[in-house]
Image (cartoon, rainbow, N blue to C red; front, top):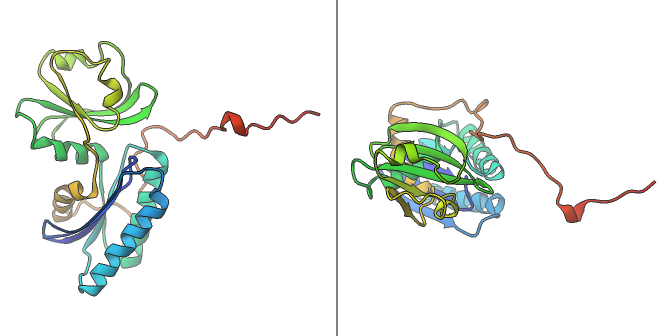
Length: 232
């Protein structure tokens, strides 16, 4: 078993946790959004202060690897890489969708599929399909959800849709086998079982070269009210 610091910043929820042998020692969560840059540093500082006071030595850092918010992922991964490098301990990367599916798996029937949905934009989501053993049935893709989406899978069995991208799809995905669960977020505390298994299997990533899984490239835009019309 091991002592881990886990970091999750892929959605508007920012969270960090300290665990030892599967027990959560400290869990920090903020649901306000758009404050990851300040919150993750504060959370990590509080956790590291506690670890020093209790003479706890970390074995690894685990971070959510995406997809999700471009800015959120950059913040979380940068923090995790800095800690891993500075403390000279391994870095573990856990896919965001797998974290969400792991949190949800205990609530579903054995023959039900799990579909964590991460909000992209408009009617687009990052969707992955798992069975209840967390085997990937369909890899993550950026989907524009419309009437009839996923009907091929829904004809075969029930699917639970959840995550911050699922709510906007509720009125469009109306198949009788479609189920929706609210308030399921990727959380640092939910990463612990997956991170512990990765640690036991020595599934580490290269600190120097690791990058989050963005799925799509970031495109910067200029808000309309910030456009300056320069006339010659």
